Each structure stands twice: as structure tokens, then as C-alpha cells.
Image 1: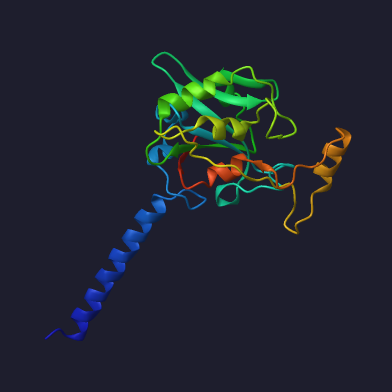
Image 2: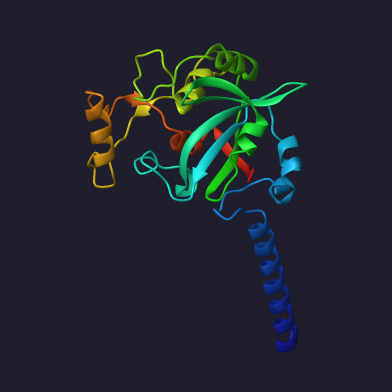
Length: 230
């Protein structure tokens, strides 16, 4: 028979074990509650070494902006840009669509953007995909102009559109699909910023037209956020 003292000691052991397990779980979580690689605790130079060809960099702003007012990133982060990691035996760079068009930039360009209020998260594609052809496709869009109006039918390209067009599976099919574009707030009303933005260009707000946004890609089931670069 087990007496009360033994029951008490057994209970304490169980509670201690549970607390230890919870501490280990918390240690494996980042501040947003996402599972991440423990590399996040390492120096920036070590994190850069962990970047793989085909990874995605998601740029999040503390204060948000007109884009993040109408879109949502993983863990509700204000993600307004995405870039593709291109790693070769000699160089580490990004392929991305910015205001001057689709460009390939050294990784230092991303590091030079480091400032208060900006955070960069690394996403990795889950499951199989044709990495080689996806990167080749992304490179084929170099020098295309930037699509300031997010129009799906023109030759210009914006940041998440570059990702959506480039990433394909082994059958050549896109792994990221377009969604109805959102320029509205939580009440379903198109924000004044976007009304004014398109009015000045004598264009209609492309609400509901097929498109993409970096926040949505960050939440896609094919993407796993593995660590925070900075």
C-alpha cells in the first residue's frame, strides 16, 4: 500500500515533470508562438549561413502601413514585403520586386535595411517542389518593372506576385495560388488611402481581382517560418 506521504511525493514528481516539459516547449517557441529553429538565438552571421536556396524572407513592420492595414501576415504580423533567397556556391543574394523593378541584390542589401521597427523572418517551403526551376523562373523576371497598381494582366510584377509566378512543383504547377485581392478594412470598406491612390491614377481599385500579398504567403500551409533573421 502507498501511504499519504508517498502519494504526496509522487504528486510533486509528476508536477515537476510537467513543468519541465512546459519549459522545453516554451523554449522552442518564438515570441509569436511559432515553432522555430533554435538558430534564432545564434549570432546574425550564423543565421545567414543557415539560409538555403529558395527560402523566403518576410519583412514585417512594427507600425504597419497601407498594405498591412488591409492584409494579414502570420501571427498577425504587419508583413509588407517578401524576397527570394538565391544561394550559389559563390554568392548569397535575394531576388525581389522593389520600386525599381525585379532585381537581384546581395544579402547585404537586406542587412542594410536593419533598423528599429523592421523585422525579417525566414520561411522555408514545406514538401517537395522544383527548387531549381523555381529559381530559374524567378531569374527570368529580372528587369521587369515594378507593378505599383497590382494589376494581374500587365507585364509589371510586385513582390508576392514574383513568388507566386516562380514557385512550381515537380509537375510545373504553381504551389501558390492567387486569391481575391483585398483593399478593405475589417468593416469591409475600401480604405481612403487606396481610394485616393487609384483615383489619382484614374484607375479603379482592383478589389476582389486575382492577386497575392506577402502576408498571405507567409500564412500559406506550404511555408514554415523557421527563424527570425533580425
